[in-house]
Image (cartoon, rainbow, N blue to C red; front, top):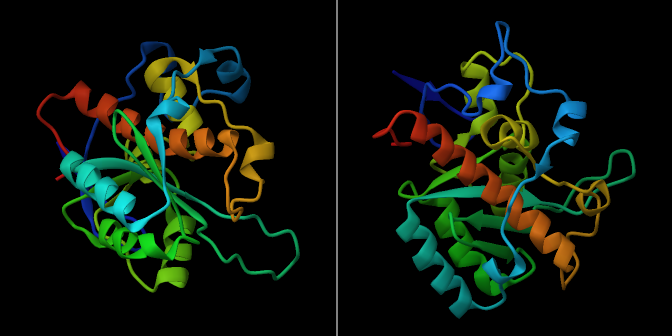
Length: 231
C-alpha cells in the first residue's frame, strides 16, 4: 500500500508504507524513535569518505554533476546555512546545497554563481526525486534566495509520521533504526560558517553524509517491499 506524502512547498510524491528495517528498534504503538542514549552506544555509521565528495567550483563541474545526478533519478538532498545568532537576523542561506547518490556526493556553494543554472535545474526537475529529512526550513530558504518552488521533494520525517511515529524522526534516529548505527553529527560543525569560501574537510563530510544518509534510508525502506519506488 502506498501513502501520499507532501511537503509544505514542492511537488507531491509517493512513498511506500513500510516498517523500520532493523528489528532491535521496532517500536510498539505509539511508535517512538530510539532514545539518544541508546543511539550513543551504537557503532558509527559508515558514511562517505572525502574521496567520494566532490565540491562544484565551476560551470563545467556543475554540468558533470548534473549528468550524474539526473542519471541516478533519486538522490539524497540537504542544505546548510551560516547560522544567525542575533534576534531578528535573517539568514542569507542556503549557502551549501548537497546532493548524494549511493556512491558519491556533490556539494554546491551558492556563492559560486556559475553553478546557479545547474542548481536551479536540479531543484526544479520533476525527473529527479530529492529525498531528505526535515526539509521545510530548507525549502523556505531556497524559495527566499532563488525565488523557486523545488519539485519532486520527499521529506522522510513526514513519511515516518505516516508510519505512526508521533515524534520527529531525523537522520540520526532513522540511521539507528535501519542500520543499527549512529550518524555522527558535530554541533560545532553544524554551527560553523557555511558561507566560507573554502569549506573544511569536516564541513564537507558533514554536508555530504547528511544527504547520503537520506538516500541510504530511502533505499533501505524500499528494500523492505521490493519493486516500490518514489514515483
